[in-house]
Every structure is written in C-alpha cells, then in structure tokens.
Length: 338
Image 1: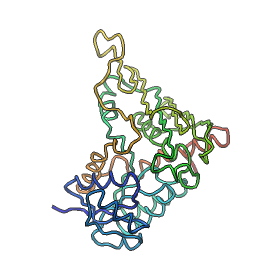
Image 2 (image 1 turned 90 degrees about the horizontal axis):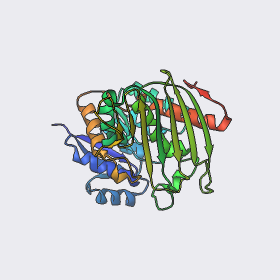
Image 3 (image 1 turned 180 degrees about the vertical axis):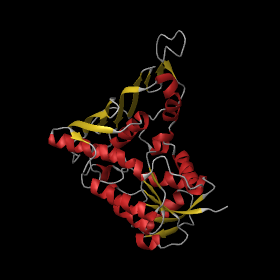
Image 4 (image 1 turned 30 degrees about the horizontal axis):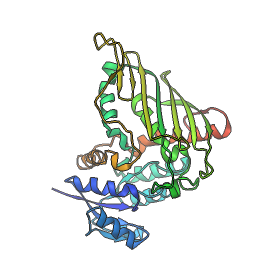
C-alpha cells in the first residue's frame, strides 16, 4: 500500500492538528515540516509525534523533496496564494487552510495553476464534518425541505490569548472579519442552500481599536432560486464562541441542534433537541480534522474530486469579497465578480 508523503507548511496552532490527522490515516505520513525557524520546526515535529520529519526552512527546497506528494498549507492568510501556486507547479496535491487568499485576483491565479497541474485540492472548511452539519444535511430533504431562508453566524472574539491573534487582527495578513473567520459562516450557508448567490449586500461596524478592519459584518444574500440568507460575522462580540445554523424550509426548521417538523413528527408541539455535537468552540482541537483528512486521502487514492476543492471554495471566496466590497461602497454587489 502506497503511503503519500506530506509536507506541513507552517508551525502554528492548526498545523499540529493536521499532522495528527495525517498520521492517523493509513495512506499518509508526515515526512517534512517547513518553518522559517529550524528550532520551531523541530519543536512542532516533536510536539506532534513526528520527531523524524525533515525540517526545511526553504520552501522551494522542500517542494523538491521527492518524498513529498502532498502540501498542507497552514500559514498566515497572506501567504496562501504564492505557496499554493508553487506547490501546484511542483505537481503536489494541496490542502489549503481557509481562506483561500486575500484577493479575488490571487484566487483566480491559484485556480489557473491548480487546473494546469491537474492536482487534487481541499480547502479547510473542516466544519463540513461536524456532526451537526452531517446530521442536518442528512435530515434536510425529509424534515426541513426546500430552504427559503437561512441564517449562519460566526461570532468569535479573538484576543491576545489566541496563538493567531498577532497576525489575524492586521488587515494586510488577516484581511477582514470575513476572511479571517467569518468565511466559515459563508461556507456553511452555501453548504446547506446548495444554490448560487446572485446579489450580496453587507454592512459593517466595530468597536475594537486593536483590529485594522471593522470587526462585525451583517451580510444579506439573494440566491438565484429566490431564497435569501443572512450571515453574521463578529470579532467584536463579548460572548463565548457562537456558530449558529438556522434553517427554514417548507417542511420544518432547524435552530442549531433543535428540529421542528410537525408534518413528519406526529404530535410535535415544540422544537426537539438532537443529541449531536455542535460547532461550539473556536479551539481548533475541537474540530473534526481526522474526518477531513480521511476524505482528502480517499479522493487522492481513488482519483475523485474533493467536496471542497479550490474550484468549489472559490464560490465562498467570491461571496466574501463581494460582501467586503459592498460594506466598503455602501451598495449591493452582483455576482459573478469580474
């Protein structure tokens, strides 16, 4: 059985979870770690249970390693584009942590490189494998029906106690409230709606002086099938982490882990609670990385398209850029973007 060698790029918080997930899959092994610091690279290798992994401080040299088949990009947001393009040109399959990139132009360049190289890609919207997402999706057709309205929210007050705070709060690196984290909520909206967005309207505000962008956005989405959605993203919020998924269809409704479908559940008078794990933590150790990696490896081994390929995730990116543009100019933005 072939084992695919994995290069982990970056030694931040999320990289350790990717290392452990790749090591758990029988088809992959972490052969190398790339860091600007030899010491940090080795420390991450030891901490994550791969002390024999090669440590690189030069990305181009790491890509020349013939044992590397897969590149897992876990670096700050502003580095994703060039690292993805180089990995594609080197013929490597690529896992890209969200967001894909900080500009629409870079996103399109990445897609061109990936398409030319014909490599597999997966963008790290890991909540697709959260039990709430999986169960809600399984019940959607029978118990919720065709959606006409939905709300998703990413409310996460990232402060100095988070390892990524240093760069997330900077516009040049983190990007915006949506790019830094709220893109998860945009992705969730697309995951459940399963339709194309044709118009985006967004409004922004904020109360924190340590963020180089407005920390809060309210985004309204108009879908081609007539449905509408509302997405909230806030780094300002003084609250525990909240990720809301509210779905309203022609058969019933879902409020996070509570279902109401009186036409299917005889005698139902109120919402019933579903005994499933919800995405209720911003701690990455809480996220289902092993399931994400299992999907990625299955697609590589069996030559299948991943469920969140770069081509698919571009749709989320496009909505994010449209929302940020709408908030900046005070007008609706039509899709597709130019």
